[in-house]
Image 1: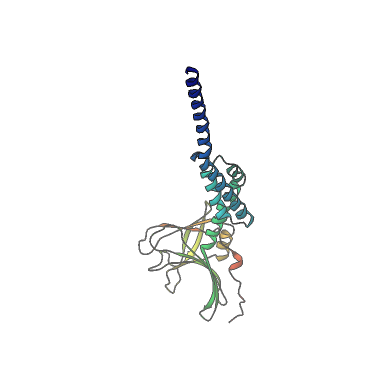
Image 2: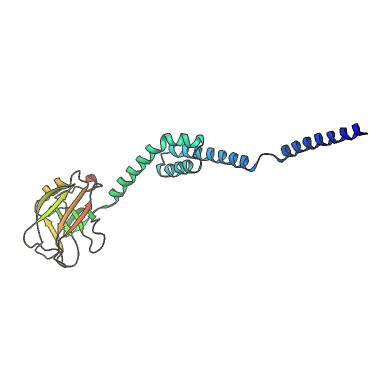
Amino acid sequence: MHLLRTYLASTAVGLALVLGACSQQASGPSPQQLQAQADAAKAEKDLNTYRELLRINNDAMAVTMGKSIVEHFPDSAAATEVQQTLPEIEKRYRENSEKNRLAALWQYQVAPMAGGTQSTATILNSQPVTGERVKLVLRRHTKWGENVFLFGSGKGFVCGKACTLKVTVDGKLHRVKAFAPPTGEPALMMSDDKGFLKLLSGAQKVEIEVSPASSKQPETLVYEVGGFDPSRWSQLDKRKK
């Protein structure tokens, strides 16, 4: 009888172990394993999207997707692959974005003006960011020729028949002669138009110190001119009426 009880007890223990093992197998992967599988699938899907964005040269979306992969799946094979190309793509995207921003600061127009035709390239000062905005204008006119001037509003600038402006081009100071138009417009005309255009060629930043007539206090107008496209400032036939 004792042997029988021992046998039955041993059998019960063994059966319990078997049932426990079967129960674990039947329950499937753990939540952690399931999450890891889902993450791997998502990382692979996002990686395929990143590859396609690179193929079609969509740098903006590629940078966004690449950063997301590296942030959310840092230890994945997808992140490793992305990090091989992302720095270069991000650098190119930043450079192109800045180039496009600077180009968009300029406005180009060809239109009838005072019995002739004028072609203008204009840009507003980036600084100061408050107060009166002042245009830097490059103008070609079929009668008046080529001019460079500042055009504001209100009372214009302190200058008179002649004055000398401090003009800093990419950190280098120049002294540029100018004059106020005798017809009273709120403008400052550059005396040496060709000389100013030469300073502008290839420049990134032009700073012009002026004294608005309203305040009579000097202030520096900053122009981010690096996006200027000379080909868009149209040449005009001087004989055109």
